[in-house]
Amino acid sequence: MSSNAEYVKSVTGGPTAKAFNTNFASLFGQIADARVRPSNLWPGDDEAQGFVRQLSLAAGYEAVRLGDLSMAATQEGLAGPIFAIAQSGLGQFVYRMATPEQL
Image (cartoon, rainbow, N blue to C red; front, top):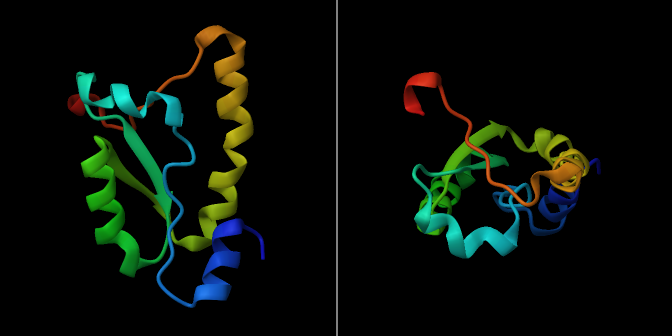
């Protein structure tokens, strides 16, 4: 297995997605105050898409698909750069993947 999410799928056999792990959990309570919805990157199975979108919206995020489950290892690898950005002086942050006209 190349990712934790792919391991979970191998055990459960059901639709699988990886979501929320590129967002700081300590900021979840502040998301409702954001001017625009921050993004929630997720890779996963097509069958999980509706559920991930529903969960993301309920939490105040916009789900942005990163690809199929084979991209889960890439997403897991984003933890290092995200923590490095936070530690470089920015602090914990949210992000928005959007076209310029959506900002």
